[in-house]
Length: 329
Length: 167
Image (cartoon, rainbow over all chains, first blue to last red; front, top):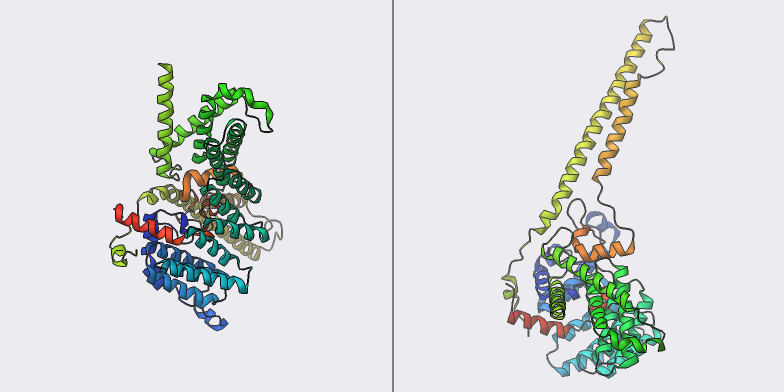
């Protein structure tokens, strides 16, 4: 099925993005380029819908990604004609097109200066602030990006997207405790987001397996990761990513159960007993194999999973079963 | 860095057939429901016609025979009344069968449906995707469209075109 132009295209595969940007000529031709504001023309032409502008935005992003600048500029022109130069969101799109056009670092510096000029005039322009942070990060100036992001979060602390970006920035620098803190802030703002729970579980697991972590902190991270993955599958039935994480954590814990049992009592977060972990492990195995079976057979109602993710889960299960058979022998 | 648009348009997007298979049960359901609704409508029409004929006959009788005045005119025969009620119920049944499946109202069931079925679980009876379906509503927290690094995306895309390319 062709991906819909109404959904943000940033998570699409290259093939899907290509497919979308190939629709550009047809979409540009069939959609009205401007919508008149006079009430008389509204009587005779089709009425304006928000979907039209969402379409233009998403088409703009896909075309920029696939390098179809012509169509991207057309989309931008229409958006500017509708919303004007002063619209904050449109300003961010204009900056985005300039970034994509920039050939070398000098041009990027100019774009950055423009952003800073805009922010000097109006420092509450959040889309431009975010563009500036993204550009700083893209240019490799991570510390600057982090401090700008912290500043943004200082005056807009309920921006879950920004907290999530901060977590990703810290994670890219290997600063696990900070990344975990930022991700927990995201969870405060979106407590039902099953994917964020799973993501935090993954970060915790990374923190636990990082070379620095040992002893009590290792155990704390593992216990919390276990809880996060459990919460994600509680919020979402048959969540492949959640079960995958749960399987990883429980297998790891079961392997090391002898070592861990002694240090348990010190901290607030206590690992559940081995019995519970074993049952969780069995549950994850059963669910994963069910998902893999249905998904490979392309059963009705099981086609939403990403094939790559299913393949990785299959690998994990086969590794696990081979390890088990080695032990038995 | 930019790949020419000519190359992009050389690949025709092919529509997969998966969608047609998914839609088939909906088609059968709408067919059944439409038949039942039509049957109910015919029954209802018949009942109305009978009632009308009956009253016409009664008034004709009343006009010709002035002996017995009010008692016979008052009520419809019971079979017409039953037919009307049955016809209404049959129409209701047809309409109810034609509605699309109810959405899950529990968070975990609904979320699981999104993950398990993807877009397919949210098609309406005509096989069109629901306009308000957005997939995982929290995915923006991981893709972060406000912070998109367009230059990295372009590089990755150019690399993808060079290495594997569209088949």
